[in-house]
Image (cartoon, rainbow, N blue to C red; front, side, top):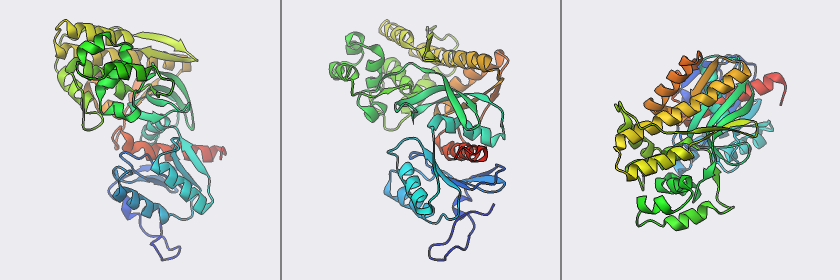
Length: 383
């Protein structure tokens, strides 16, 4: 692939895409050249050519000065492209850098919803053009309604997608602070201070419960934040040093358990989508924990409940849309227990499960998905 990069100060002479040599290349047959800037955490870049898409290795967290400067330097060398692609979130550094590149080259800026990009990345890797159902489960992605998504079932047909299902939205008290203090999400799901005060003695439960009821507190459908709530209840996780730490601890506790606690969930139609309400399961976790039931059985029961509920949404959506393929993507599918249970449920229903091949299922693949969606928009004449 001829990469649309120039050496600083060398005019328009193209050079090899050395910044992508540690990444991967996937076939992507298009006459369009686009640059995708990914997202801020686990940032990667993607450039398409006439026959493939080159994806850089993960550059790191673009919020750090060194990574920001590195990405900015690469983008400043870009010339002669058809479009720039980025996330929907208006406040990401990766979005702002994409906007700057779009203005500098006077080319269109295409924004792609985070979870659509997750599913599209797998479609790009596997060279799949047919419509699919996608389960995208992670900690955070800016939704088309401006709220924080993260437990999503999408119908994806090329550059189009529709939300077929999701987790029930709950408050995310303190915004990003909730990802570092899992007990906050437990309070949000419990919807009251009674049991929460017993579980989290010494913490400002009443203040966080009040914050949950404020109209200014953001809401989220994040599977990652639901894992945080469950980990806080079952294992007592109060503080973590990185996102996903509480979920990893819960998976470890659940591994190898043969007698998981049975937990309930509800599926409810909401605004044309199917909503998975785990509120009853959370209450059951609390009561069982306070009654002294084994932590490992509760942890395993939570995995089983969430996997079964999300799989049920995907099975319903596949039936309604007349498709037979389900794509799994998003960082939560690094969890082997969750992934294995979802796959088993989907395959039992006669569906084919499609997984990432070369790239991990997390945010490092987002740039490839963004590029894939943008190329389809350009090919269809939408831009």
